[in-house]
Length: 300
Ligand code: SAM
Image 1 (tube, rainbow, N blue to C red):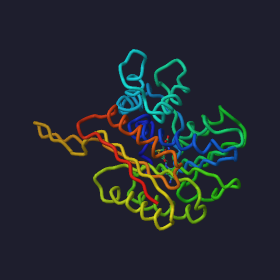
Image 2: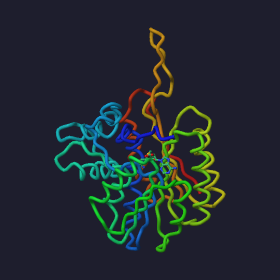
Image 3: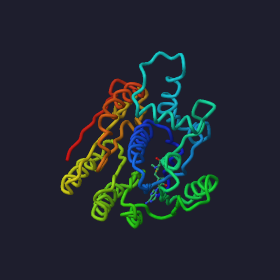
Image 4: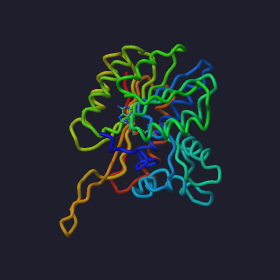
């Protein structure tokens, strides 16, 4: 079950989409003084070295955040970045004050970086090594009660924090989908969370790959949000074709992850306009072939 390690994928195109949306959503929610609770159901290790073995082996960040960082160096001729993408790169820069992106912040550290003293962060991570790393990384930063790391099943346990006492929360649900049941568990978790806390904000990442469960998930999330009478927003980013190619020698090449999406329930009302500006730039700057594209859909 535990073959997935986010270190191989940190800073890839899916992280660019996910973390741009996360930062824009958090910054909007943090405009109000009242305490915010962030629940990260699948937290990962929290901080990643992009020049380390894992990221170096996969090379995924080179086609993601590192491409954006190198194209925005002074002297490179590109139109100005949309606000949401500029804010994403500014947060990455905060972890790399000397420039570049050697260190990549995962969702726990992005949240930790932006939250205020009176906010709370609940981090669920089940992988023993990643949970230990996350705990150690967080402990170096603060020993206070603001952040809790739980080595528990995020799907099964995270709803215990809903609703939080301040009745303001953002729940990020970002599983690896390495097992087929993750798709159903995302739906069951979201349904249960909405039942407990209908006014919370929910952000769910999903892969776009040629398998029926992956295709069905956003459709079923839309139905869930519509039945609950809640507004939703769905952003997708495609960077390449999903076709499996066969070369002259007959060897097949799988494309890796070609596309992903973020599905939000009760999104900030400002997010749609922000993504309308940012998504075309992401698709253009992260394109790996002519199939690069984006979509933005909303309802409720
Ligand atoms: N949210 C992270 C980020 O944006 O930086 C990345 C998370 S990664 C996609 C998914 C993580 O979920 C992996 O580290 C995996 O070990 C962990 N995981 C898998 N099943 C889990 C479960 N049921 N509960 C909590 N964590 C789980």
